Image 1 (tube, rainbow, N blue to C red):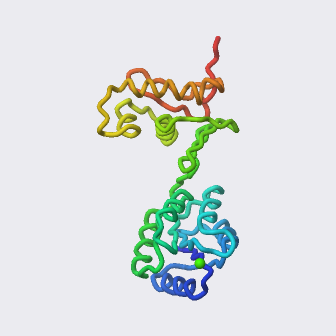
Image 2 (image 1 turned 90 degrees about the vertical axis):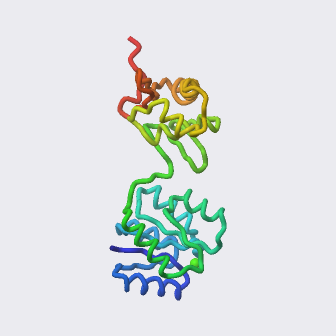
Length: 232
Ligand code: CA
């Protein structure tokens, strides 16, 4: 198992390297964000320990750029303060876990072990189905280059659809995930919101990406069929 430690403070980097090596990991170190990006682009690390405060790019930016180029090694972010904004920024940038400095080495090892076990799963921070993109962090939606304005509820419904492309989603399942368990209205609300969504993400672009599956629910078509049906 190979781990990349990204930390500019030499003493801390050395401590992390030695400690992880004692646990049997092969450890590389990078002292800045640029070097980290290069190393992580060249090597399939099983985990990254990434400090937020770096001299060039910060840890959030490093993580974001790695995810953008399709590098999904699990990332444990080290933050200096136990600030909610830091944790949110880290998770939005695609980090998997975070630890606040100062931390106990035993806890760091436990977190790294858990991440390595979990492995690198593709968890794109921007979701794409065909030319439709949905960014849950910035709440931006676009069809190709054209931005689309959605209400909060429309966004939530679309986000759920793009997380499950090609799957038939029942009205009950959509209500449970997009509304909440306490919702007691009738399931027509789903039909109403699907109609709103189609008016915004499909119709202006001549698409029919949100398919009605009679008696079952709705399905977001994947790329191949994401074209208008032949009107003839
Ligand atoms: Ca640092």
